[in-house]
Length: 392
Ligand SMILES: Nc1ncnc2c1ncn2[C@@H]1O[C@H](COP(=O)(O)OP(=O)(O)OP(=O)(O)O)[C@@H](O)[C@H]1O
Ligand SMILES: [Mg+2]
Image (tube, rainbow, N blue to C red; front, side):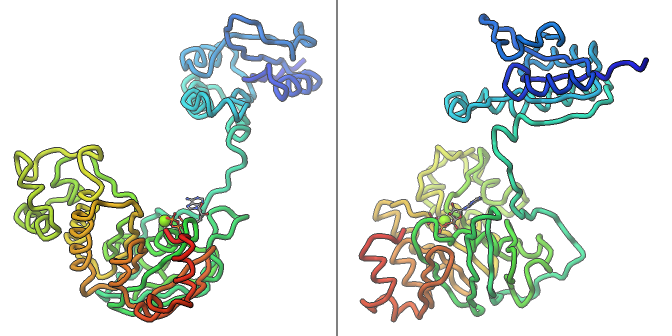
């Protein structure tokens, strides 16, 4: 008689686990169920098959036990059902939940690999926890055999762009607009309307499901990511400051001339700030050691250093004190010269620096026009949104 096939189940004391154990027993498997050592013996759901299954002690939080179990049992099939199955509880103990659902799976897979067990592996725990995750069309591949972007100050064109992060919720619905070379286009609209999403498509953090995003006449998908990103200065709503020196925070750890860096810092209004630091560009800074205004100015300094022909600026909506605000606006003014600009503006001062305004609502353009005329037209959608306070 052929040896019985062995199944190993984590989470056997749950409803799915006990049901699975029954089915496998019916099919003639030898069933091993892992239970955690706890003060109360919580095996009510498998009591009726207690004599037929083998319960072993183990814990997804402990890799050494997983190794030992794989070594001694050598299962043909592993069913990982052990997880935090109460979504509500996962909010109370998020780190433990992530440890069991994420690292627990890794520990089990690693035990299988280390012990050389040849088995089939079924992962149920994390899908139970996180739902069926559908991957967004994220784009991080580097592809060097594509054309480079030759024009310094490119034209931007969105034509009939449809995009959703998840397949069931459209975020951009047939977005079309043009920013001519050297022109500044403002995107304004309420929170969640899709403004940052437009920036993410230009920078190719994501690709549209249909329609085209063109930079300098090229569909961005036909450009190398490196060429595209080298030519775009992207300032997002959240400026990331690394736990690193001022120098590395500006250059992203690339070599650069200290004189140039100091010059740029003073041109954005950070000269005095730099002067207060003990040793020039060497002191370490961190997210906690710079103010919101300083972080914003450092982000501008990064763009000046890169000197791209296209700038996408997603302004933070947080308020700065009037002096810092004035300084940020001054630096912004210099930053926008001789570049094509997509400015997601939250402040009127910044908005006034643009040539054209697109008002975005729910992933579509609901109004567009030259900045000067829209700002002064009391009947515009823009003016109405401003009155209701819907603009961020
Ligand atoms: N990474 C993501 N995954 C899933 N949905 C997302 C993601 N980023 C944004 N969204 C959703 O897409 C929609 C548009 O978001 P977006 O960030 O573009 O808005 P926004 O106009 O920039 O808003 P705000 O003014 O608050 O910055 C929102 O419903 C948002 O919840
Ligand atoms: Mg945004």
